[in-house]
Structures are given as structure tokens and as C-alpha cells.
Length: 289
Image (tube, rainbow, N blue to C red; front, side):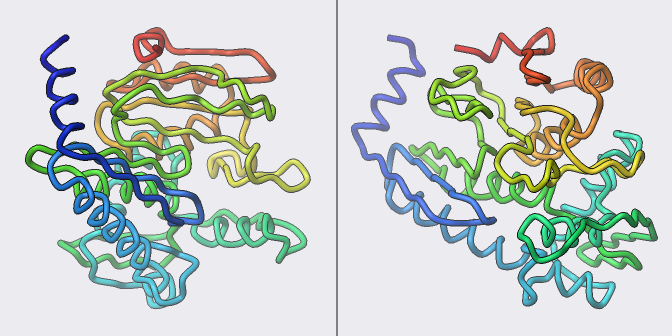
């Protein structure tokens, strides 16, 4: 038995806990093993739900909604997301764009059946961050970052001295404590891959929520709405926030561009299913069981 196996076995003997709840319009699962596992799982749940109340753009009382109504807000979590969003906007050449809040809002309304058609207006504006203060003259879309960020913060809350935590939120995961399955987009119970990785995981694709061939993915640089692939799974070394953002980015790009983009991004490996064919970056299989 390796040292890591011995540590996990010792933690398991001390205790393990599991918490499931709804957050970010999906199912969250928190698992903890080790000292005061129940306390860690409960703390992670409370952190996740508290952050959701601040970051949910579709909750009129949230700080993100207030930002989009008034053009300004002071909130450390919103400021962190905006900074990272602006970073990814620059590094993806505008494919990942937090300035499309109006498009995101109308697109989600269309997918719910509350609109006859998605928005066709892609606008940009000015966004500034100073400390915890964010000022903008355009509605922001932070949904491509928020769930991954909440997973990261909840996982940190679940962990502690003598305790390790794992958080999964609708396909976005902190580094798993054991094998995890990549779900098939075809309704097949058999997973496409089994991952065993110490990196963060995120999946994007239009198969879960789609209306008339349209899903939640869009590319502002081409003003195209809809994922180009059946499913995209990424593993990232940095954090789950980055996995969340880059899975969305790859889903919006044509296949050749997506594979080239993923190959050039340090700390990223990707698995794409495009027209039924599997495509992976060179190092992805290192994360497969």
C-alpha cells in the first residue's frame, strides 16, 4: 500500500460524509473523508449556497443582478470573476466574453420557452475593476465562470487538517478522490471514459439543454449560437474555474481550432466528441484510468 493509500485509509476510518443539494440550477455533491467529515461537508454546502445567492444572474437580489441593473457593485467574488473573465477574453481572442450578459439572459429565456427566438445582438462595452469594485456599462455574463468558482470555494471549505473534500457540480469537479465517469451524450448508460486525475474537470455540451438545435453555448466573434460538438470534457491544473471557462470556449470553436487551442494552452488537456468521433489532446490519456 502506498503512502497516499495509507493516508486515505486512515482518513476514511476517522469518518466520511456526503451532502447533495441543488445549486446553480444543477445537482451538487460534496464528499468528505477524515476528521470531522460531517462538519466539512456542511460547511461546503453553506459556502456554495451563499455564493450562489451573490452570483446568480437570474436572482434579482444577487450582486451580479444588481451590477447588471446599476452598472456598479462592490463584491470581492464578483470582482475576482470579472478579472478572470477579462483574462480569458484576451487569451481566447474574444471567444470567451463576459460582456454578453444580454445575449446570455435572452438565450436562457429562449431555452426555457419564455422567448420565441434567442437574441441576435452581440454588443461590447467598458468594464473596470478596482479592488472589490466593478463598474460596467454593459450587462455581464459570469455564468461561464461562476459554477467552477463555487466548486473551487466549496472544495476548499470541505477540506481541512486531517480531512479531504471533493465537490461536483453538474459536470464541474474539483480534483477527484477516485475514478469519475465521462457521461455519454447519446443516452448510453456506459460512460465514454473513466478519468483518474488530480486535475480539475469540467464538461460542456448542448445535449442536456437544447431547443430546436440551439443550446447555451455561443461565440461572439462569429455571432454563432450553439455548441459545435456533442460534448467537451477538459482537465485543468489551475482550478475548476479555468476548467469551466475553457470547456465552454472549446465547445464554441470549430474542431480544428479547438484542438489547436487546447494543445497550446499550458495545464489543459481535452476530450471532444464531434459527429460521433472521439478526439483528444496528446496528454489527455494520462488522466484516464
